[in-house]
Amino acid sequence: MNKAAEENFNELHKLVTTEFLKRVKSGEATTQDLKAACDWLKTNDITGVAFEGTPLDKLASVIPKVDPELVQHRLYGKNINRAVSNKR
Image (cartoon, rainbow, N blue to C red; front, side, top):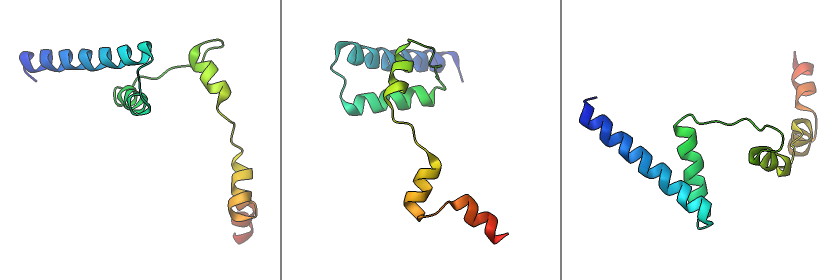
């Protein structure tokens, strides 16, 4: 990539990131904006660790926990792991 193209990419990257930050901080962000911002973070390999008391920790604490065995039981009426072991 030549220097001019790299500088243009970096400028665009900064502008997009700044726009997402502006919308989220102002409270103007729509659901689509938040989804796009999450996709932007994922695309750029940005991750976070939910340390105790951080906003990510608070978000994680309100997301319901999923019990995979309960989901399997409700979907299939039985424990899939047992059904697979019985076939062996």
